[in-house]
Image 1 (cartoon, rainbow, N blue to C red):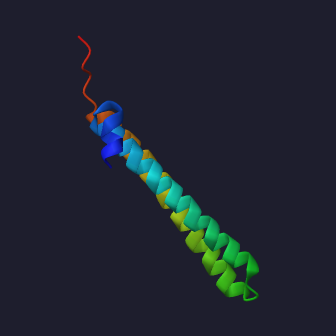
Image 2: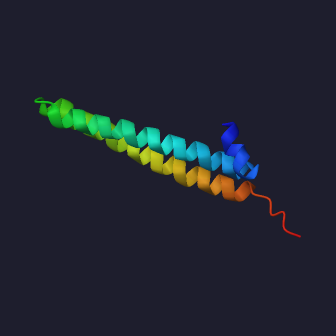
Length: 80
């Protein structure tokens, strides 16, 4: 987390770094769920895993949009 502030020493940089981390973890977990669903013989369980994967993907997209808007709204312009 310290590296996020080291880039520009701004809150927006920190939010962007945490958003990227959440995006990577969510995408990885979603991929694992979809890969597991492809290997299952049970159609119901496979569909359930794919639905959970879809919900996680939608939440990650919502988190990305939300934190981008929050970061943009909290940025202070320091130009003179």
